[in-house]
Image 1: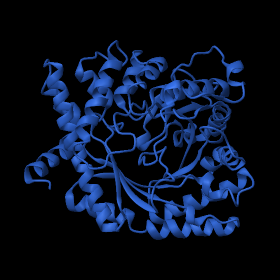
Image 2: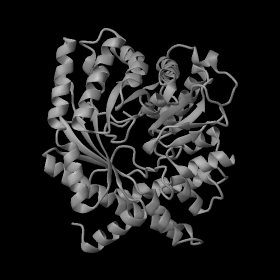
Image 3: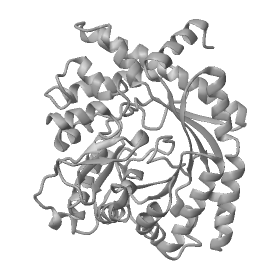
Image 4: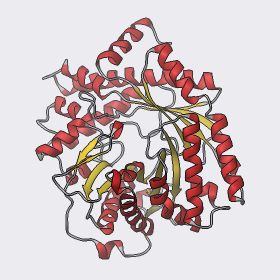
Length: 454
């Protein structure tokens, strides 16, 4: 039970330190919607989503009002669409009809996003998988609330380099298809290695095939709360620093556990997990970069940045797992550029580069996230960056991801504007030496030797 002291402390964090629950995400299995008739498939998908998610937004608003806890987003994650549409979809254009149906359902129930326009191709691609991936640019250009992901690698299977090459082309095509909005479509497309089944955060959310028919997952936030707590231990040793982060992460996660339990009970849908990630926003004071600078860096990107992030990530996990019976998803610290004002400032100051961000992804929760690059960047270079990040995930047995935005018509020195939680981003330079011969090789990179644990 949460006591009155915790309630008072939580109210203070909400009012003064930007604490919020980032999302309640309703996971829905669409496996029972499978049909060989495309029109019937779309009808079943729309009916199931609008029926089971009918009260999701209202329930979130009730919890916000009753407990005074801001819940920023209400979202839906679904079974990867390539698994649902294979029997009915013969072309990429067939898959686009499902994207339109999902977007229509999202508007009907009032959610911010639906995630799961996805394919899982870490070892190889079926024709259905390939058709879905090739449909992504059109699907994201013609919809407003659809998020897409492709899992191209895992520690167990290696990296599907055919899929990596294709995804580089798809990222570039998505940028072109949405160039009138600073290539916004790419902000809703993420490429994964070791994607988790129960991630409530967009753009990578989907419902894994091991999940039940419906589940409630919650993602918390709270960088501002951690930053405020660390201000009180300036100059102290690492032991006190780590204890402060752990205790604060516990408090933040307890709020998520409360919201998850309430939403589950009120909707009559089982509770899945709390994702205890520190998820920043463009708001001043709600920044992971500022936490790292409070720890002792002059700017994010300075020597010591990777070590500080590793410590932060580990202590967040250690504190958070004590606050919830079920922790999952990504869980740790996100380092998106456009969604974190401190990261934006570091890029503009010249202290943070794409290469340093890649090093940081070895120890953070995800990977290269919401990074705007020159629109002239080639598809093979994008594929090379994806391959590098997938290798980090594969070898280190962790989730990594890439959400790059080649902003068509803009170059280094320009700024891309995305709006809302997606923020804005300075265009970052990319190494201009090519990797075409490497990316053009066919097949897959084998799994590392330490993957063989049976």
